Length: 346
Length: 252
Image (cartoon, rainbow over all chains, first blue to last red; front, side, top):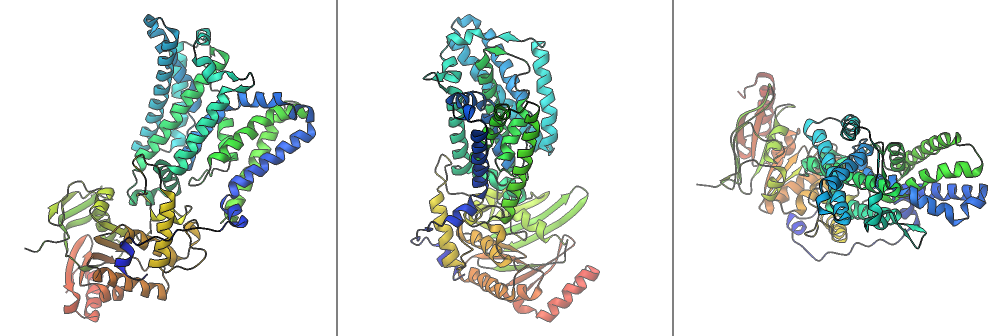
């Protein structure tokens, strides 16, 4: 340190440049390179063991139709986990968003224009999702209850609300097929490329920008790393965390809409079965369960690994009974790898 | 009448049943360095957390430059020019250096998007020019967690400096520092005075406080037990008084 005045008067700032060094790059991005390595290795294994399946384009079209339903929720979940929180209620939010959708569609019948009705219904679903996310965050922050406990509770609460409100009924959504929203959300570009994949890419890019290029993301990392420091330095940790829960609520409701649109049918159980694959995508992608570190790209690759394992197990010639075993094996190995890389890293 | 940079009037703070601070009156003049002394648990940290807006006092008033400030929060205190080097350093150890320097006040445009290049440039300038860190390990993109104690302290200090503070609060800044780093820190506190700023300096080591402070305030069991101008009291006498306060709760 030299003198006080020098440090506070703005002088011409030398540009900070680093010469590219592969080693430094590898260390700084060890988690992402690790998951990329796992991804490529598994892919190679799949291609070698089942070339007929994994060299044809049909399997990739199938992956791109089914994986986005849970992968889009894994993106905001990554943000929540980086903030050292967790959300287990998003599968129920998917269904609750659809209840808001159905209610709004029926209540706006007087408009007699399916496109406008469906538009309003989608907006209602997204608003419902964000509100439920806000409530999760509010309970967690204001009462200081761990998010694990709160969202186990709200998971049951909202699934129960769905069952009560619909009386457990399932019904057709055929009417959506006549609106522009059907091709927009779940259509196929050129008969091959599924629109839900486009939405996944959009949400991934937005999630990355929010996390890495916006103040919100900077605060998320700091909160997950050391919430006390963040508070001492004047970050509104409560508001930021509530916003993160609103984000996953919003995206979960959107996932509920596209999953229901895809089959043009409403099941009160929509979202069941997505809980573990979404969580696994996040942790497989290298996001630390302790908070403070994690990447969007890792989660994106993690989701495709999770999504491909099931298809691959069958294609390779093993019975479906093997799927869970292989899931578990790959998840445990990856988490060990990430922990090892983090300890060794930088 | 002389206007104080900072003044606390009858500030009390209790956490539930525990009375942490009792009717504290404290003044910090312009260009003055006040040393805060007291045993563990005397209430020093609570007192500075009230000044930085982290805790709100149960009762009492806070004045900045003669103007009463209500509902002081951390962002508000920082706007008023209070910067703090915390005892626990308040760093995010898994994050890079530039993120730590700009913790809580990231440079961004009006939509909240970060100006990362400028933050890295500023961090680089502060580290090399101001702090004189030349180690390869200390660069804007390295993680703070692997720094030495002195380097971490350097980060906390640079952060307080960058934002043109009027009042710099140093809470146990010499903790965990080597002798050389401590000497550097003491000269830094002297520079605060030369630059016309004010500081509150808290340390276990009476010698450090005595050497840099203009005035020493002794806190005991949540009360101000006494205050002395360092030019009017000898180091030995001050030490005797400190021991007596710790044992009997009274200075004499």
